[in-house]
Image (cartoon, rainbow, N blue to C red):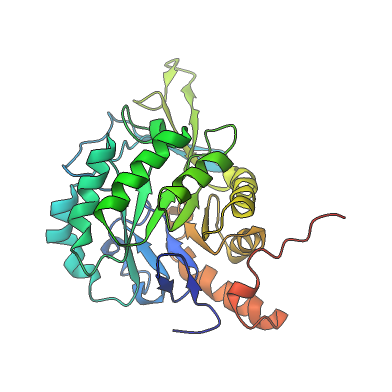
Length: 307
């Protein structure tokens, strides 16, 4: 590993650099392998997985907006068993860490997925999705309440010794109590933010553009909100914070690191620029060398507040 870029993200997991792919935007890695050298990434976080396959929401499920993207995929997925059988063998060949995004409708269903993952050596960690706004049960219903969020993380922790990243929702008044609750329940790190609930209307049909009516807004439009919430979480908890939301270039990523994020995830940018992740890694490396910073961890949390 290149010492300049290595980061520890909790639970004993060290990444070769702080740039990860956000779940749901990079498939299972193979989809981008002809465009991106997967060995260069800090981690691949795969598409969200539940215990059983799920068909997701009724189409249409994606609509573009100014400076962003609304999606209501609804966590369509092949199920954890199919992932381990059909997708994980491909990812094993790379040196990049593999993190599985876990979803359920009850704490037990989250825990059931975690138990299956726990015995898979090729899975380096779990990201517990308690923040998806596009499903009828589970998801954001857990992420907006500290006690419910803690119950999910605690149930997962009972079934695995792997690092747990709790993915938090922006659709709350105050993220700090939720971050504190999941850390107390056993989370090794927190990631934020997931998408912000929004909608779009077709003026000619006078109907919602999404079959689910509302969806999750991602992309550059949400970056200022994400940056603020990452800073708040980093000030409140003593575990690594992973920043997500509108990161399209290395300058965006550096802002999150300075605000307190130990690592970042790149999501919607993968759709507009499939090489965004590796370009961001190169940009961070160049900045550190230009500024004479010996390790990326030395940049984390260096925000200078007004006196």
